[in-house]
Amino acid sequence: MRLIVTGQREDGLSVYVADEKVEPVLPPTLGGNEIYRLWGSDEPPILPTEGSRPDAPAYYAPAHGYRFSFFTIPSAAFEAEPIKDIDAAIAETERLTPGLSAALTDHEGMHATDTVDLLLVISGEVHLELDSGEVKVIKAGDCCVQNGTNHAWYNRHPTEPCVICAIFIGAERRP
Image (cartoon, rainbow, N blue to C red; front, side, top):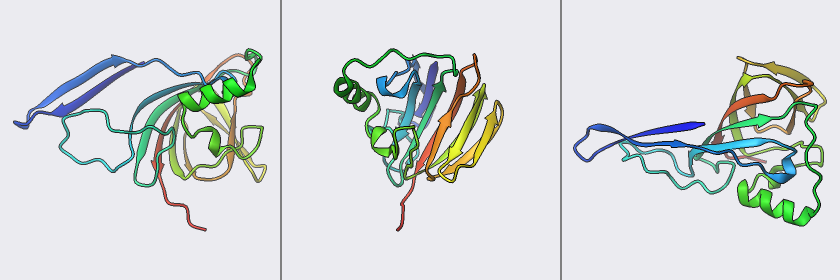
């Protein structure tokens, strides 16, 4: 995947400041999911900007922050490598996607975040299951607004992976 970034010089002219290839991370405890962490900030954007990469260490955005990423969920036929050292796999997942595992609410992938997620399925299809048991199939071209609810993603297609564009907007969760 290619990421192109613009910015502004001190004289006000717009320029390209980056044009780079982005490699996915493959957290070992996520069963073959590929994640492209493209851009984000822990603070609201302030313009103009020279285009330098903002600080965004955690996978999910805190309140007032945002994240821009893509993720690929492998097909149902995909068989992940067996995990030999679970402690090492958990540590590597945390290193690649800090805070992602903390959002898990069960061992089946159900999770809840303090974000509003704006999602567009680019290719394939995915089942979005809520903790109420309701399931919707979201297909290529479909959009979803995921409002911090407890949910899980499943690709049940026998051969086709699902690619999703995700923008996570940090929110405040009230009791």
